[in-house]
Length: 403
Image (cartoon, rainbow, N blue to C red):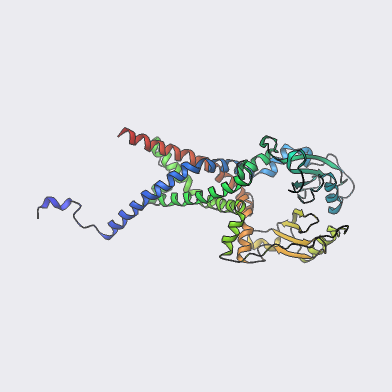
């Protein structure tokens, strides 16, 4: 045989070479998927990331922009009113039929109670409001102020943080927008995982994919920046995308979780008969706290007369520290005052605990300030990934045209 043939491709390749060739072939398919997913829904990722970074600190921003609603106007020597009295005062100020609401107790003695009432579909919305905030002085139970949190149809009439919430999870498109954003989150998970496949160095040169080359050309710098930003933010981004599906496609998400672990259904509670007064919530809470002490009150949610349980949630519960998530919610029957359900990482199935993780992960609250800062930075990475990805596509497109 002529020795000149020894360098041709007719020479049998090793098993390692054949495997590498197959991986490179598959990589081209993943590159196309990553490219078109990035171009197709990357702008939504950038928008969701930026608005999400703002919403990490939405409580602080809302309080800073509306000090008159959040802060007590003057010092009071008297003790605070009971929770029952405050709820009754808020209901008096709410439109007829708007009974269901939630409130977060103030962090200190100088804060008001802010009650968030949401639009019951059977009643006409006042002032076209979909959600109202009613501030009550905890010492006098007097009205401090009202505002529209979500407007019924005009995004410019939302509150500041309401504007960002609606844009973040629904693109101002109502239930259709929320479903669309949930579907886009699924596609973005595929995009993120395809990016990991493309990032993986087939030649084993890990330093190249983990760092940005110093003094690199603009093309190389953009490539390395896109690659490094995607890799180092991957875990946080995946957690945010999965939890985003939980919020926007809750029924589908629950169905999928139940394929692996059963979920405990929410108790209905006892409806109140016509004319039947509600038992004092203070007494029911005091009784419940004897069984489950610890933690600071974070959230109260109360239903209308048709049914539903009163929910009291507490943060920084000492006996839950080992579970990382130290939040506990007690669901209390509004008619009997009995505890219907306890929701915390120490109770329920694995599926229940997994569901409990979703909001703390999405907001970053699971790991305190560290978690919030990580979520904030991951949100900023989203537009960076979109911009560097588009630049990379344009660079390759220009290079092909010049050939």
